Length: 241
Length: 191
Length: 191
Image (cartoon, rainbow over all chains, first blue to last red; front, side, top):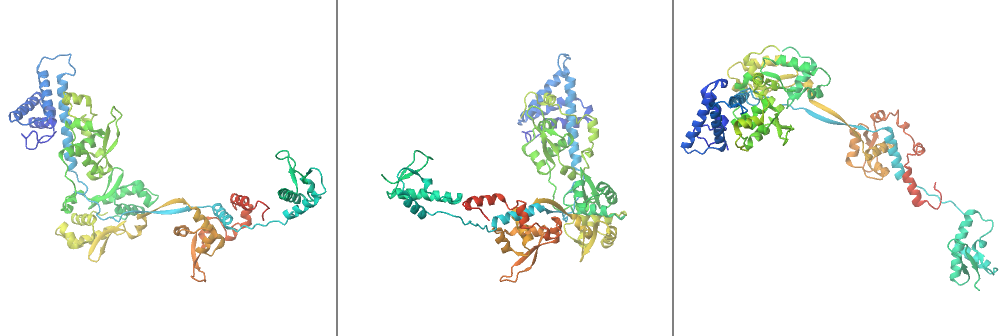
């Protein structure tokens, strides 16, 4: 929006406030003492001249012109106490705005004129540079160490399995034993009756398992009959009727 | 020169070798325990009036050539970018008013900020966004950086040229956007 | 420092800002007519014993940080890190079996060790190479260092608990053993 629209001045203006400030500066050095009314006149004349030259003005210049025309009439007309803020107050605000913009413009120029790094003052062009070396400090305690060794040992130490020698009754022995004993029984007889007497608990369990398999084998051969009332009930054997 | 003690020598060497301005904590990380600030102040005195100066910029310190040596050192290549008038004014407004919103900058200048202006200042490393203002719309505010102080040779923002006078004159008071708009842009905002 | 005259100050500033060592002619191109050599010699005296020295290399001059300040320019920052499981196991194997070759470590661990693992242990100062084993290939053996004993609070390696101690302390990983019992040793008791 800003830029070349107002080519009456070769530099162009940075907006209507910039134009006002330049007009004000031409009027007086101290912005506090400028005549706002005269400034308004100058601005309006400027805009009028741009119009006659058929220059295209940006909207904000026209907006400013309209507002200044209002301010001018308010300053000239008899004071209406109802209107707030008063025209004098508005004029003062405009003057303060111009002062502030002027101050900032001057401050910018003073900043640019300072001894600037890389233009007026210089740092070393090839500093050695500072380095930060990361040094790792490893943390591990004795417990970490020995438990790690325990873990490795447990994982890789060959495990030796020793099976104890025990008394057992083989399937063949059980078949022979039941086949021999069944002949002398007539009635249903519990399978436990066929186990060897006086056997220790381990041998008894082995004998029971083998005898059960033996009973199944003999039943398959038709040499015994099996009977059980229900699951987990005693198992009975007899010679087929 | 007056002989420097070993601690001051270490501070001197570290700052000399550094490729960035250094804070006291940054220096201490290299030189260890000791009165870094005291050493810096002594060194600054040692170097006052020499061709090299030790200067403070914000909370960081650096060696740089003395300002009056500029004519021996200016380089043929133009290293410092030329700023547009809009950018210079915008930078000044940010520096003297920070933190400041874009709308406030525009109110002071009476014109919209064109697109690249803030970008140029941020790209130069002089300006950065600094939080939002807790008003409706939560506009972003802008402020200067440590790099701004370093580039323009300011110990702190208090050293901004004429800042005390401007403040005393009320020219750095907070911008009342409502009245500024009333004064200039009331009939129709341009943004 | 003793005040330097303006010509010496210019030489000082030019050398400071230079991006490489400068010859007397090169300096003169910046500072103009004057006794450059005399200025350099005075500056060298000024800076003797400071953290920065002006030194001559062949026919060129430069500022550099004093040699005895070099250690301040490098800052080492300690970062405490935990050893990886592989590293601590490897360390334990070395401690219990030293001197031990890499292949032996792998056989004992039942897993290959990655390249960095031994490096980490050597970097920590706990392990060092200790001669070669006189077998085909002459593999390097590794052993622990005195620093290892110090770090782990051991008088000697004999203070390391034996395998029976570990078992008694329940450190032979009872969970793994229990699993193995279930899988393999059901019918009868083990050991």
